[in-house]
Amino acid sequence: MADANSAGPRWPRVLLKISGEGFVHAGQRGIAMDAVLHIARQTYQAAQHGVQLAIVIGGGNILRGAQFSAGDSSIREATAHYMGMLATVMNGLALQDALESLGCETRLMSAIEMHNVAEPYIRRRAQRHLEKGRVVILAAGTGSPFVTTDTAAAQRALELEAGCLLKATRVDGVFSDDPERNPHAVLYGELSYDDFLRQNLRVMDHEAVTKCRQHSLPIMVFNFRKQGLIEQAVLGRRVGTLIRAGAAG
Ligand code: UDP
Image (cartoon, rainbow, N blue to C red):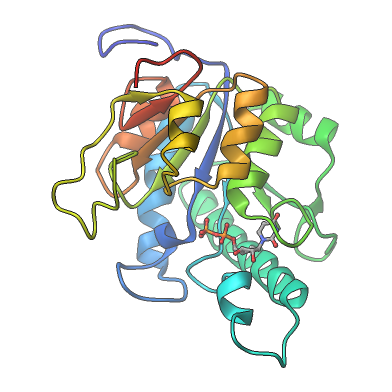
């Protein structure tokens, strides 16, 4: 892991997962372009270090399938999950325009084909874009219902051979308990996959962590609201919590 004084980025390519909460103000729903621009500025600054950057975006600021369908028999859960995936496409379009308004070259790729708004996700094409220095925004999750965009992020990080999955979220990292409910919750600096799963910690989807564990892909969980942390995380500096094989916990 690079320290604050080291020159270059730690990994040549990273996968950044940004939760939908990054696209709106705390406690609100929908899309707020000033919040998107805030994320875009930090992301663009990070990309300028020459790290190849793929971004998987969430949709929770608009709709989460499981919540939307819970207790309402008039909508099938699978339908609600597809709606959630479409929400991520809206966020993707917003992030693409925000990044391009700053002069950052991007490509928006969707796991659900919709040629009028995004390229279809094709792994090798995504790799080419990354090699050419474009920021690649990956929308519509995995394209399949019943999973989250955390799982999509793990999947894409593995197939695009990213060095780390960077999970940008609204809390500082992985805590021993929900820090928004328990003021005594302790923030971990480092944690093994097994400890994360055994303690049933919640900040990241367990399916995604299991996938990363299978392939020893490190995960860094950090707070996107703190200025500069996206850039530091992309450079491979230690921010938030690192989940990796053999960590002390
Ligand atoms: N979703 C899905 N398949 C995927 C990714 C996402 O069905 O591969 C749906 C799921 O309903 C999810 C919603 O899209 O709740 C929005 O994504 P997510 O909840 O992961 O967004 P975040 O919490 O990161 O904002």
